Length: 420
Ligand SMILES: Cc1cc2nc3c(=O)[nH]c(=O)nc-3n(C[C@H](O)[C@H](O)[C@H](O)COP(=O)(O)O)c2cc1C
Image (cartoon, rainbow, N blue to C red; front, side, top):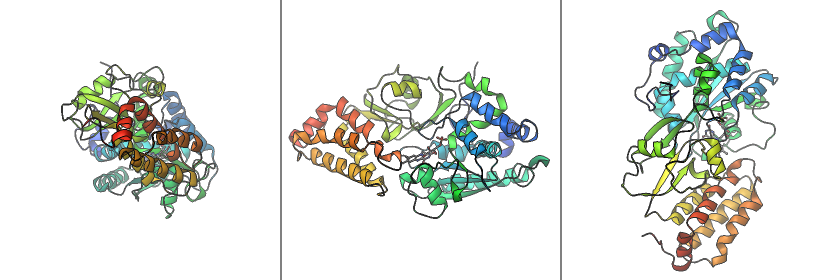
């Protein structure tokens, strides 16, 4: 039967893998072959053919970024493994680093070889103590095996790797804020251009990729892009890791091919822990749009985009029938107001005003027309920040107001939840 998974053989994390175990399933074969035979251009070509897209949220074509970084001039080049992962509910990057750190490392080494970098930096959430220990073990094992260090496998390719703790603000995972943090400053996004691929860490070309994206590279190189493209839909290839949290009966990380249905995911999740029927589902985390549950919904970037939502980085949240969606919307608005780094006036004004409006609506202290200000604020401020945080409250808030107007109206009129 055709494989339906790429990162976890059984579709979920089972055992914490050592180098020997990773080698037994072909680990580092692609790296060794690429470094000694195929060369950097072939690695880029294979990732291009596989049409790998980033798993950090935006879905940018990975080969395009790698090719730009490879072409860029610089004294040094860097690869940053982005494991900032402060998106609420996401823990798939931590899981990958803890369970299969060599898959991530091999992906980062292949990317470094492809762009001509000599330094890999694992930038991981400062709370991820175990993940960082697993990376250190993996780096040591890789060094002993000759995959890391000077003149790899007798070639002129030399590469080193290290770890750096990512500060906790959400925005510290944005790729230019990552660079600021690595340079010892507050993690605040930079205006773009220039993009990190041409002027990144210390002004040098830098490839910043998500942990899961990089973990997809070794199987592409090992088995070839045709194999990779057999998994997924006609437009999106490979798999996606879904982070399911405590509201589900079976929380955990699950790997499913693009094109799996919502029904399949909900079945793996065992439904809500409370046993309540679902009222709403949120694929893609807090910057995505709420949807009404639909077991036949296809989970792929294109199908969720067609519903004005997104697959984001795979966090799937669920809300039972007694959930007040006005409460949920306010939590999200408060999250963005708290996480706005404050340097772009439009973002600061938008996120704090929206949270204030919803707080007033919640308590029944707002005139009815106040809710109409939210779409206007979002529209007016679109794109007016250094990063996309300014656009993030739009999809969840507008979809909650559209799908569950009765919750907002009840709060406007009575200051209390209609569902309780
Ligand atoms: C506010 C904000 C937070 C982000 N946090 C993360 C993060 O924790 N991890 C991540 O990989 N990408 C994060 N991103 C996206 C990165 O800027 C970047 O697009 C990503 O690391 C690129 O990797 P990919 O192409 O492999 O997906 C964030 C973006 C924004 C705007």
